[in-house]
Amino acid sequence: MRRSLTVLMVMVAALLLTGASPAAAADSPIGTWVKKAEAGKPAMTLQIEQWSPGKAKLTWHVAQANMVLTIVSTLDGSFAPLLLNGRPSGETMSIKLIDRRHATGVVKMNGKPFGTSKSTFSEDFKTMTVENDFSESMGGNQAGKSTEVWTRK
View 1 (cartoon, rainbow, N blue to C red):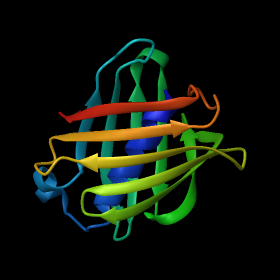
View 2: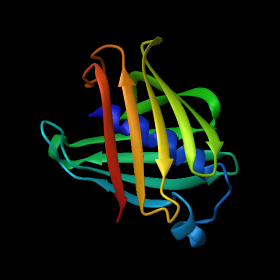
View 3: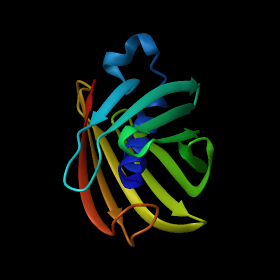
């Protein structure tokens, strides 16, 4: 469950670094994104906001689990804490913007790296594809590779 959030955070943060304003949301990652439920994974909603120049705030809602995950990232590859229902979760993530539509990320649990993500937004910013690779099961994620597709709401 958190794996999806991690990957999505990477992609969203990267696009926010481009400085798009909320008014230009159709041409940026800013807005609400949905990932439908699939085998063993709940549906999720992601809200992407511009926090300030060079920073992004991402908030995932997992209604089925009564869970809210939040991160504020500088989008420069620095690690930032992932909050679970407003409290530290032990998980941190670095998000680095590659270009306007691509980002990478690294996820750690209690300081130990356990996953990477590559995110790509479609040219029209209607879908986001996230490729995850987790070295071990941790933080609610299964080890191995997976691909997620998120759709703008």
